[in-house]
Image (cartoon, rainbow, N blue to C red):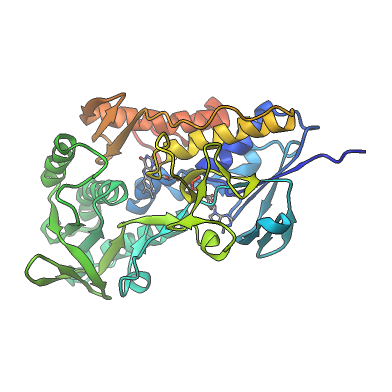
Length: 402
Ligand SMILES: Cc1cc2nc3c(=O)[nH]c(=O)nc-3n(C[C@H](O)[C@H](O)[C@H](O)COP(=O)(O)OP(=O)(O)OC[C@H]3O[C@@H](n4cnc5c(N)ncnc54)[C@H](O)[C@@H]3O)c2cc1C
């Protein structure tokens, strides 16, 4: 008798959770034993971590428990932390157990890239997971609530002017009035400084759109320093300017200056990788191991039709494509359509009611951008969990959770 093939999905983020929910909907349960393994028993929208960190989106609301979405008859969930993958022997090692598979989907997401800069690991906060965002939120709350006169406690340096850095700086800036009013603090004591490496912020946007965002951030009193961070300390950072090294004093340093693939990829030496991201072929499979697929930030392709900037949009499309291919494989069909990324646009939020973006090649900003940003987040929740979850977990113009 032929045994049922085992599909193992590693990581319950945009890529992995998409594979799981798509297979749940479209693959009859007699066709495969499907297991999702993830570090936590919930999914969270990484794209909203800046809101969790700034205290405008509650951690309770951010957690979407797998048990509430997954049908345990179709998808088995295991909470474990993956340590290493051994594709030669079709095994995966977790902290608690070793797992075998016939087909593997690796969707372990990103990790923070410190570029080996001194002090980043030790002194900086990051937005690399829900727990790291909660740590930052707790720190911000304590700085304001227990403020005892040291102005450096209210100085925030955000290293990086890409999506993560800008969205976080803006979200925090829009909260400052409320935080100061609640805690009886003079607003002029708060400083938010963003360190930008490039000529303009938000490098994924054209100069015109990036400048529009910059003007909005100027209005929120966010200061910019152009230079390379060369060291982070407990209460300051050193920035290399064209002719000098500048020390910026602050007791809160947030590292948003880049990501790379998961550390698991670094430790699983069998894979050909770049920046801890596994090189995949046009079917998002690992060339050497055709039963291993990669979705999201820990995959990278050399094909021109795949945009490699790590985004939720890309991870989501990769997840759906891999799920469809797994269904084809299990029905003995051949894979003939290579993956093509459909770029529908990008929106950067600037606080809850403002933003800048490009949607279907049209530049947008203001309330419309904020509305579309919320729409994109809610569409994801709708796709994985239906309309009821949108009401419970979604983003709306007027908030109730902060
Ligand atoms: C603040 C912020 C804002 C962003 N804004 C946008 C945006 O507006 N638009 C956009 O398109 N993209 C945005 N991004 C990028 C986007 O969030 C990522 O590209 C996307 O999350 C990648 O999806 P993924 O499935 O690869 O990884 P993730 O969604 O990060 O999922 C990885 C999963 O793997 C689990 N995991 C990790 N390591 C292990 C392990 N060792 N063992 C078991 N499980 C593990 C994690 O818990 C998680 O569930 C933003 C990112 C950040 C940080």
